Length: 341
Image (cartoon, rainbow, N blue to C red; front, side, top):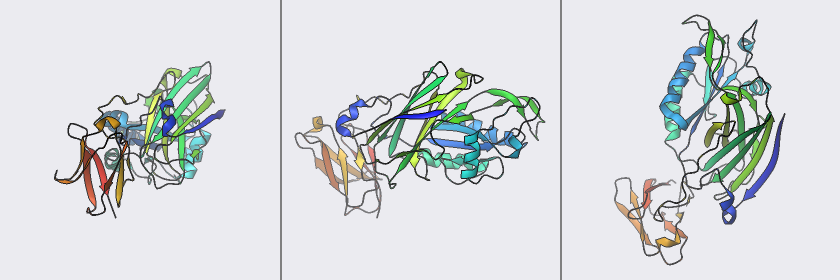
């Protein structure tokens, strides 16, 4: 049984309440949802591709294996990975054969295209950060999810999704290359969703919005708690995932990037992409410094001296060509700005 207990919406004046998620803009991370089955002889090759990508990308890539279709029906001592939520996902995404996958909930594709899709995603900035903390008390799993919007989105509404997976389950797997395997290592198998399959709606997603929610789930006693992982992700309704995080179910928590960064580093930058002006939050301690905007070749295109007590800078980009630019103080981190019309 799953429950959604708490909803808190906060704005910048109250954002100190956040403990799991950074307010610093971060790159996107990637979610690979594999649609598979224990009697699918072609699936181990796709699993091998996925495992190679997990090793390559580390925490930038999170996986969920969703067993379904007629080939997931077990017989004898074969493991049963079927779930009600998994069947609903197969139906929602129109999966009618396996192996296939979705990267950040984009179009279904075969394993050969996953690498390029992931590489493209992790090179982009995310408009929202997500943090997750999980604890187990008896047979109850409690999960706190925090979302902080660092940039603007084109979506009026977003959705939080929280899944429970189990890793390293040893059991039967058909394999047309190596022969049927009785002791196959099944990875990231979906056990249940803590949110509805369609997601938990977020209706306030402006820059600076902070969302905090609590979910609970009663665990099946047959599941090995040490191998359970909680996967949380955020994205627009029926759109591409912004960011995903994974933590251990029993005591796992995301690590917030230190907010004790240089005062010369920039805060929120919006809108992105920009058309006429771009707003940049700065530390009041930057008074007297000059913020410089450079093009992709490093040439200065505009600059703005910071006045006493200023917390925001407004840069005009109306006369700039569409493209990528970089804003920074001397000695501070350079941040990307996209101008598009």
